[in-house]
Amino acid sequence: MQKLQSVRRSSLLGLVCLVALASITISSSCDCNSGTTSRGSELRVTPTTVIFPITPIGQTAKQTVELSNKLVLPVEITKLSFSKATHSAFSILTKVSFPLILQEGEKKVIELSYKPEEDEGASGELIIESNARNSGPDGLIRIKLRSVSNFPSPKISCAPVLAFDATPIGQK
Image (cartoon, rainbow, N blue to C red; front, side):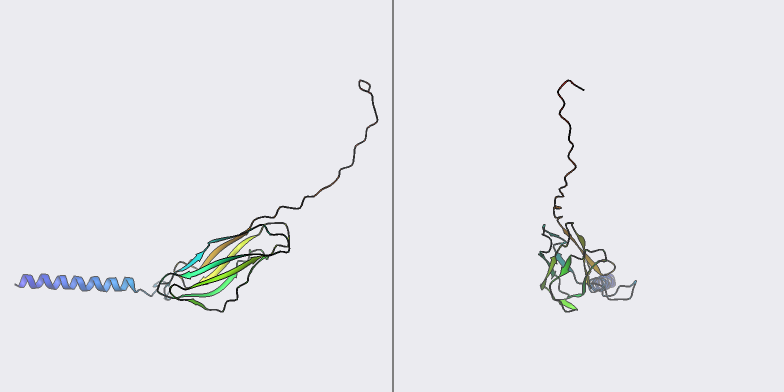
């Protein structure tokens, strides 16, 4: 009888420990290395690379990026910007108030534009700063931007014409 009670107690104790351990793992909200709240939300970005088509100089091409939250916890987006190396022909058309909070299942479409001022391709990165767990260690998600190069305008030049005197064949 005592042996059975001892087995029940150890089983019960093991079950309590397992439940406690599972709840710590599931509801963990501490980043023990930094002391900050961990990222429990996930921001999905579609597409992850935005390619703008061939666009004549002075005209504008537009593309969209969809931001969505597929998890229960809200995603807080605190900033949209471009990397320093991003070409100046890119811009964000959508007006966004920060912080932008996306609840479970919510989406936000961001419209981008590309307006070339020269016949070269352009590239850069759209940077999304958020609390999403799939952000990099710096809290950033980077979306590649690039344009298909415009074909350079042909440059036609005329070389000087060479003129020869009439010389019969076989004579020097």
